[in-house]
Each structure stands twice: as C-alpha cells, then as structure tokens.
Length: 243
Image (cartoon, rainbow, N blue to C red; front, side, top):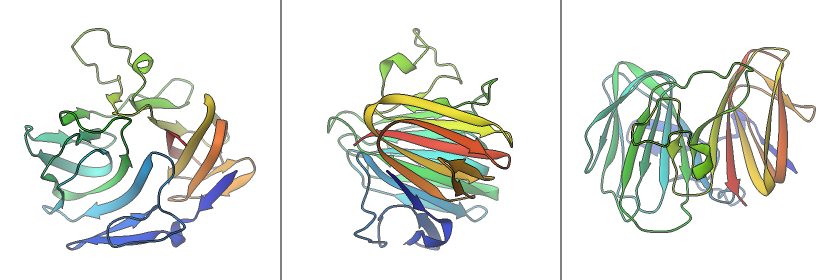
C-alpha cells in the first residue's frame, strides 16, 4: 500500500519565528490521520534565518536526525561539545534517558534542514551525539545508508569513525540517501513487513508509476522492496522502520 502526502498538504508547526512543514503530527500541528508510522515519529522541514537558532527540549527516548540541505549549522546539545554541519551533513542526537536542551544555530547564510524523529527499541540509556560530513555518492547512484541501528551496516571495526560510515541509531531502523540522475533508478531491498517512507528532497520521481515532485512524501507500508525512478535529476531520502 502506498500513501502519498503532497507538499501542498503538509501541516505546519511553530517554534518561535520558525515554521516547520510537517509530514506527521508535531507540536502544535495535530492531525489524527498523520500521527506517525511505526517507529517513524516525525519528518519536519524548515528554514532558519541567518544567525538565528532553533531549539528543542527537554526530550527523552527519541533519535533526532538533522540533515542539512543548504547553509550551515552549529549544534548546541546539553552535555556535548558544539559541532558544525555543512550541506549534505548529518547530525544525530539520541536523547536516551533525557536531554534538556538541543539547539541549532544558523550561519550568516541561514540554513535549510530536514529532521527525522525515530523511536528507539529500548527506552533509557545514556544520551549520544554523532555528526558526519556529506556522504560520498555511490558510483551506481543507488541508496547509501547514512544512519542505521543494524550493526551489520557499519563497515568500521575500529574505534576511528570514517565519514562514510552511518551514524548509530537506537532502533533497528535506517535512513538512506540517493542522488539519482534523470532517466535512471535506485532500488532498495529490506526484510519483510517493514514500513518505507520516501521523501523527495529535489527533482521528481515515480514509484510504481505514481509521480512525486519536490517535497512530496510517500509511505509504503508492510513492504520489503521499492524502485525509485527519476524523471528529473533527484535527491531522495528513504526511511526504513519497523511497522
């Protein structure tokens, strides 16, 4: 089953002067039709004005992934050193038993970002933070895993983290990225009974003959396989979660 959420139907949540576009209910945007899907709690997009910030907290038992589309961000998370995110980079806060404050400060050019909220398999535990620079594209233009709670997805056996290794999630979930040239496709195979969410970051695609444009989202429930075809040069982010 495929459920498409068009960009012009997304909800809006507010945090100070910042307006978020929400694929699921979040903060002051409440919609009984779009509560969450499996362990995928939220997908929000936003733009932070130059030299302004976006703050959250307190939060417990959630992984907050921030993928930067454009601009620059400086992170400020309670208990951790500040970190910088550049375009294409990814920042993770696993809140565990609790983080009182999280903030993202935009640079002089502002920042366009997408946040994914994922629920953990087990509640509690120590909070954690990880950051990656932009991930290299795969040579075949397919999906690259950029965040995962599956140990077999991490190619690093040593303590030194390589920029190409995924950040570590608190659940057996994945976040994947693909940059697909027009006329080409990317396929993804997972285990049976998963929920897959496709977000079109830029360009245009088709899934099973259904057309999606920039900022559209599609939820594929109880599935194990998807093929994304690009009708324009496209950037796509896929979320794979337990139903």
